[in-house]
Length: 101
Image 1 (cartoon, helix red, strand yellow):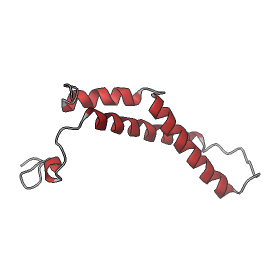
Image 2: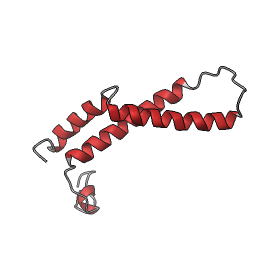
Image 3: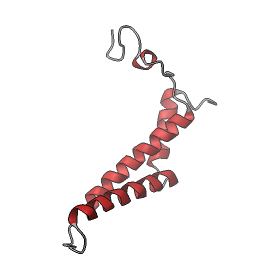
């Protein structure tokens, strides 16, 4: 029995989910992954401290986190870096979802 089976069934069929993702599901997953990568990049860039004491530190940090999250989501939706497009193409090839589904 392989690592990808549970009691003789694949993990996807065990949950009742379709074993082949649709193009829309692949597109959404690729976009979410690009947004996650962008959020991580923005978080690293924000680690630079310029000593701004105008606002409460925790409040400013929370605001920046929300701002970065929205910016990353928007950039991913627009395909700014193109990661989602590449991931989507690769997943579609691997899953066979590019065959008119």
